[in-house]
Structure formats: structure tokens, C-alpha cells
Amino acid sequence: MVTLLTTRRFAPLFVTQFLNAFNDNLFKTAMLFLVTYRLLADDPAGAAGLVSIAAGMLMLPFLLFSGIAGTLADAIDKAKIARVVKLCEIGIMALGAFALHGNSIPLLLAVIFLLGVHSTFFSPIKYAILPQHLDGREVLTGTGLIEGGTFVAILTGQVLGGLIAPDLAAIGILVVAVIGWLSARGIPPAPPAADAGPVDWNPWTSTLTILRGTYVNPAVRDATIAISWFWGFGTVYTTQFIPLVKGGLNASADVATSFLAIFSVGVAAGSIGVARLLKGQISARAAPWALIVLALAGVELLFALRALPVPAAPLGWSAFFAEPQAWRIVVDLFVLAAAGGVFSVPLYAIMATASGAHVRAGAIAANAFISAFFIVGAALAAGAAASGGVPIPVILVVTGFSGVLVLPQLLRLAAAKWTRPAALG
Image (cartoon, rainbow, N blue to C red; front, top):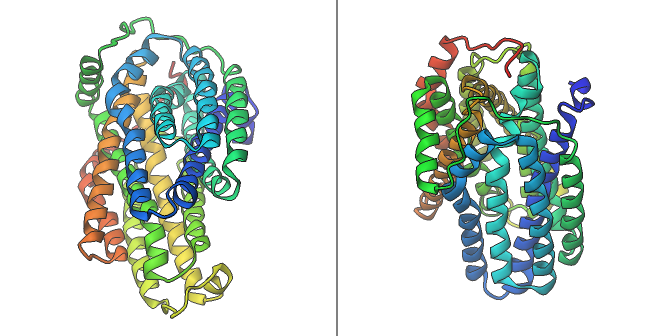
């Protein structure tokens, strides 16, 4: 694993993706705090509505352009696309820096949309390029490192974005964008397959093409559905932490940040550890068990939350974690999140290797398209349930047990004993 991080075959891609996730979340969090605590400080409802609009604008490009992004990455050298995309990020973040400094809400929203476009075109590359640069037993490790690093980068960007002033964040996002472009220049060439088709610039027909390609391949289809469920699951958990901590536990925002940190580190640990668990084999045999652990940890988390006495006055970070039951919650969250990492990483590896080299990026793009629907649907369902009076711990438990819906896909993949040889191409 450490050796892989020092090779040119993997290190530049890992650094580029890490900085990509970090920078996106640094900007988004800086924007969130700027809007909530300064621009719309006297209008909490307006701030909440704006945050929802921003979330929608971030997901919209995945629905509009995933098809184009997938066919483009299959038809052109992926390393070249990565460099162009990261060069565009410099321009986007320059605009973002101007928006943060100038306190312009319309410009901030425009930058959020452009970041969504940027992520839409970079997303197929980060997984589809791995089978071209890594040997068969390295693909699972590389996928785990990419997934784990992404969650750590998201957490780091969110925390830093909430700690530093918007003007300092404006400088930071531009500097990180330049470093990301420099790291992308080190990614080795990843030329298209000889039988790759042309780029389809029509958003409608290109999306239909990548979805058809996903549907006809049972392994890719099953992995895509299961991964999309996982993103919906993760969306519910991460969006409900703040209202859970504030309303259900009467604790400070620092505690909510700690919950996000525990969740992110847990997913990263599971993502990195699953390669050792499976000894490098690309296999779904651990996924059904991980799903069971995830659901049971959610039930245990419910009991742990109910066992924690709710104080009359809000608790700060140190007072909250002085409670013995608080550490029970920490363990439950970590186990649940680690199971999520064990669940998702082999599925990404299957999706990248089960598809032919000529449509591999299209399969990854199709997953991003379908996952966008799961993310939006899960967020809306959880929000409606919370508004209807359903306790947040119950929402979390139901979300975990909703994984039974993807159990048939997992069992089919596990029964297939999916493995791949050393040379993937």
C-alpha cells in the first residue's frame, strides 16, 4: 500500500483526487458559513433555502452531463482530460475567490454549479483509469485508497472551511487548484481502447448510451445499484448529524463536527482495510456481511443515543465526551462507517473491471448519474420524515435496514466470486 503511494502509476492521481475533494468542500463550507453567519444572518429560513438550492445546483450537472463525460473519457486519453479539467478548476476557483471576497450570492451559486460540472467530468476518470495503470491485485488497494482519501479530504475541507475566514478561504482554494493541476500533469498517459466509440455531445443520447451499457452487464448493473444505495445512505447520515446533535442531544456544533469526523475516518479505515481483508482479490463476498454489520450498528446506535441523558443546558465538546455513553456512540458510528467502506470499495472495483475497456468510464459515469437520483431522493425522504415528526435515530435505523433492497444484487455478485487477472488493460 505504501509502495503504491510512491509510484507514478498511482501517486499523482491520488494527490489530484485528494486535492479535488478537499478544495470542493473547502469552498462549499466557506460559502455555507459566509451565507449563514454573515450575508443572511438575520434570515435563517432564507439561508436554509439557499443551502438547499446550492445542493441542487451541485447535483444538476451529474444529471445533465454524465453521459457526455463518460463517452468523452472512453474516447480520449484520460490523463489529458484530467489535466484540462484541473486547468479549468483554476478558473472556477478564481471566480469562487472573487465571489467569496465580494459577498456575491448569485456568483457563489454559479461557482457551485461549475464545480458540479467539473466533478462530473473528473468523476469517471478517477476509477476508470486504475485498471490501466495498476495490476489486478493492486486495483482493490488503489480503489480503497482513492475512496478512503476522498472521505478524509472531504472532512478536512469541511473543518477548515468552517474555521478560517472567507477571504483566507478565497486564497486557499486558488492555491490548492494550482497544486491540483500540477499533480494532474504527473498522471501517466491512459489512452482509449482501440474499439472505443466517438464522443457523443448530445446530453440525452449519451446518457441513454451509458445507461444501456450498464443495464446489459449484470455485474456492472448490480454494483451500480448497490453503490447508489450507499450514497443515499451516506447522505441521510451526514445531513442528519447536525439536527440530531442540536435537537436530540442538546450538544454543541463541535460535537456534530466530531460525528462527521468519526464517520469519515470510519469509512476511510474500512475502505483501506478491505484490500487486506480480501487479500487483493476483487470480490463482493464481504459486501453482504458488511451490510448486516452496518444495519446492526445502526440499531446499536439507536440504543446508545437513547441511553445518553439529554441535559437541560447545551453541552460543549468536552462535557459531552466526558459522558461514558458518548464513547459508545463513537464506537457505533465508527463500526457503522467502516462497514460502509468495506461494502463500497469492492463494488467500485467490480464496476471498473467488469466493464470492457472501451466503455469503462461510461459505466462509472452511469453510476454517478444514478447515484445523483439516490442522493436527492434519500435527502428528500429523510427531510420529509423529520418534518413529519419521525425521530432522527429512527430515520437512521430505517435507512440502514433499507439496504435489504440491494441484498439480491450483493448475493448475486458474491456468488459469482468475481475476480480479475493481473493484466486488465
